Every structure is written in structure tokens, then in C-alpha cells.
Amino acid sequence: MHIHKLEKIWLTIGISMLFVFLGVLGVSAFAMGLQPPSEHHHMLDPAKVYETAPFDKPGLRQTGDNTYEAVMTAFTFGYAPDKMEIPLGATIDFVVTSQDVVHGFEIPGTNINMMIVPGEVSHVSHKFTKPGEYLILCNEYCGGAHEFMKTTIIVK
Ligand code: CUA
Image 1 (cartoon, rainbow, N blue to C red):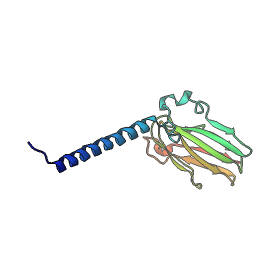
Image 2 (cartoon, helix red, strand yellow):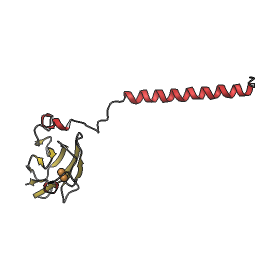
Image 3 (cartoon, rainbow, N blue to C red):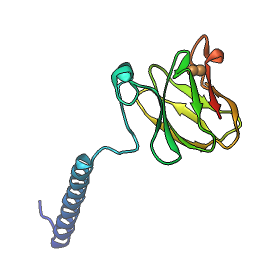
């Protein structure tokens, strides 16, 4: 079978393009494989939350002049620590994870409303400028006692 010169040229160009394309694909896949895991997706084993820092010691700790970190865990059907006192006017960085299933973390009267996914760490910050008791509620259905899943923080 005879191939015309023009067809040969086109065939060569076509095959070259194919190799360039495959090359680009290969290089980008390789580059993606080398990327470090995203810092935003901090993963941990939900079954080992009890023994994984900082969740092995849930509670409030001071991190700056007027900033605190509130480490909390969500579980069926509650939160740890059960009651927390928070200094009035301080900025609180909540660091929350789940020990089992998906839970909610909502504090009515504030802008705090997070989904707590097992294996992930959720962050939210809030400055409490009004003293009083604040409820933390679960707003994701998580089982039989879902509607009773809550805790209180006291700002004073
Ligand atoms: Cu936890 Cu609903």
C-alpha cells in the first residue's frame, strides 16, 4: 500500500502530538504524586482520638495574651469536656474532632456552626463579649439521642 507524502507528514505530526500529550499527562501525574498532603486536611484515626494529642486532654489552654485554644471531642451523645469556663472577652480557637460519626457543633447566638467529621479536625474562632451560658448543640442527625447531644460553656 502506498502512502502519499502529505499523509506521512500528517501521520508523523499526529503521532508526535500524541506523545507530547502523553508526556504532559505523565509529568503532571508525577508532580501531583510528589505534592505533600494538604495542611488543611488534618487527618487522624477516630478510634484513637482518646490517645491522640491534643484530644487526649480536651479542655481550654492559653495560647496568647487573650487567646485560648478550646480542644473538644464530639461523640454519641455528648462533647468533652462537658462544661467549660471561658474568660470574657477572650478569643477562643475551637479545635474539634469526632470519636465516631458525623456530628454538628453549633453555638446559637454566635456564627459558630460546624460539621464535625470523624477523621478530620475542624477549627473555628470566636470572641465572646457577652457573659453567660452558651449551649453547644449537635445539629447533624447522629442517632437515637441526637436531640439530647449538647453541652454548656460559661463565659465570665
Ligand atoms: Cu451528634 Cu447529633
